[in-house]
Image (cartoon, rainbow, N blue to C red; front, side, top):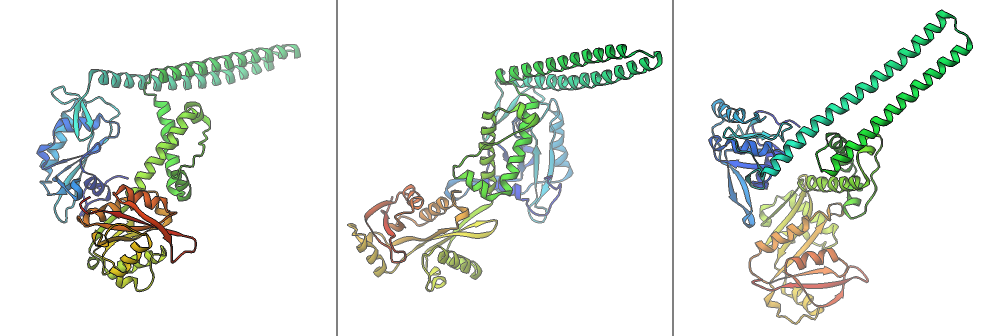
Length: 467
């Protein structure tokens, strides 16, 4: 979707870039003056292109993660013209799209540089470089040679395909013309039936020759395809058919949530292709394409989630009610849950497209409750060493296996300070136990029967202080 040239707020795509920080697809600059020809060339020479945000600083956030912080810059026509002139000075010129965002508050510029079809590009000083993580890296001579060869191979393949199509069309026209001419000559000269038989024989010979030519053209196509694959050259026909099928698979996975969940869980299905796509893509290509599509859709889905951890009083009453419903849905606790949520030290929520779908908390349980848990588990450690409990953990079924609960538990533990923690989990809930172990919890004592589910057992996990 095209990005508006001037918008009052910050687009959702730009928000994702700010949260992700500088990387393969994004670079932050304090002012437009700081944008160099090197930056523009690096993104144009990359495989996916990228964006430069001018008027943005990089600052450390939660856990030391670097994210973008909007500080604003000059967004006048002069600044935009300055960036445009730098793009035009590259050899060949680099295509850019300049947008102005956040006009209602602190405006800044977004410069999008698509991956170029006319690469490689160099700066006015002759420097060839490309984006590599958070930096611009000069192209090695072998990389530069590969790009030139791929460009020439693409032009050759396009010209060959056009020539083959033109020859096939001309042969078809010739066959039709010969058929019509011979029929007309036979009609005018009054040839006998034997002559007509000879004519049919001639047409049959022509048809055989055309078929042979078509077969030879097909063989030549196969040889060129094999040469491209053997030398690992970029094949524009292959790329076109692969991209077409890849887009179809991604679209299907985004529409069919059940299918995506099934594939994400490890179940594999086959991908069938037909026509031109079946000629270009091997079974291994189709398998790799499906795995890549699952990964891409997974990233798109994960971007729809957000997690926040804060004091219960900072949540609205509507949010508290939504969290309480989730705790009840998870069969964690029922009686007076909304009031009990407000007594937690920290309360966390997982949102999917702004709707709360998961929850967790750090709380100081009553001493009688903690003693009952430790006694049932026959714990051998002092109860007073573990004043906080990690509890009220629940995530709706369709949102599991996306790594969100792991992130929420980690945030709760990190924000909980250095106090000793304990948690309980159903003995049959292996996923929750793995999440706890990754946060340095260890299983302690013995499993004991659950009060809520007959036949179910509960396991105690502890995390010592200063861990």
